[in-house]
Length: 101
Image: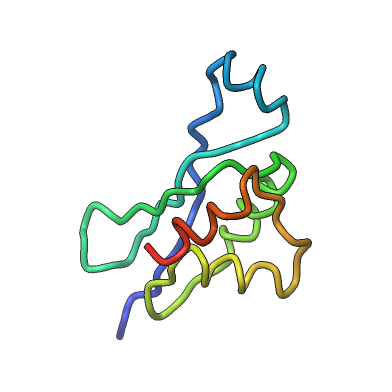
């Protein structure tokens, strides 16, 4: 039987006060940790800055979400947005930049 692949967020910031002064409060960034792949230590996807309320909703959604194959960030976001509000990115182009990794 094949293992399911699971995903969870790992918050890493922003914690730099200069960054917060430039962009305002209410942003979260970090990575998505992925378990169940061939890598026994897991895999990571960069998650560029998004509104904190979106981060919280995405985090909760990922706790229940599993796949049979490894999804890219873009695929995860597309699946998430089918049943949840659209994510607000600090820079919309970040999804295109990081989305296929």
